[in-house]
Image (cartoon, rainbow, N blue to C red; front, side, top):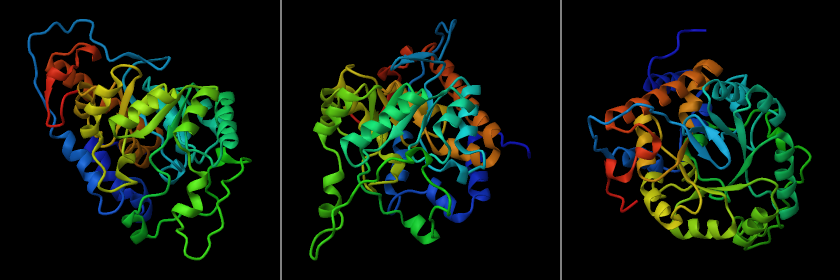
Length: 362
């Protein structure tokens, strides 16, 4: 194995070099003109830290309790599909790396390796991400499948009823290679779309009847064998409806800028969601996290943890499990250095008064 990069920025650069153009477009690109993809990063940089000095940093720690899990740090590997496209060891490599770094991981329903194999490779893989699977019975069957495999919570992604328009993938001609599929959905019925009649919309009329609504979410939260975390929330009103439906957590997310181009950045949406939820359930965030200082920024604006996707993809593409492990170590080290320089010994010390930002009250 060649020498690993020394910085997170080098990982990003190396990944763009080693991946084929179509695979890079799929994992690293965004929807449309990639406005939201860029805004996620731009808005994080608008959060400035107000360091406080000469603080007592003895007993410093990044540990936390979150949705029934004790975590050594608040950096969670986000669900990403088809990771064997990045490295032959795929999701199993990510799980092993996450576990080696005392971390946690969410496995995508579109994973390219069986959930049992991934959990066996790294017990830090504790959450399973899923979409609504066409109807209540099939969705609940998938939830029970995940619970039987040993997962501790489910992430229901609600912000992608259809795929975004991804210009980069179209231009690069991306399509999953033959033989690659979502193996953890094997044996489950596929959603049955209504036949399309002349004059009808392929988007609305054909698929609307298989998409969930809030009453379906409330039903799943009530019937699920595991806690349900809602991913893809960007407004205070949706966050409140999620809490009312019985969600155990909220993830503020715009799908990494991969679905609705022009959507608000995750960090800009975060304070309003945190204020609306008002501590009823944990609020997490993803979108644009590239450095440890970004983790600090999100925590200061009210997130209890963050999910990272593209940095994990960078590490996996460049160095397999070793690359992912190193990326996570760099992120955690950078977070701890930021905390020390800002005068924060624990995550509880990372409060709203430690930053300035233009996004309203946290």
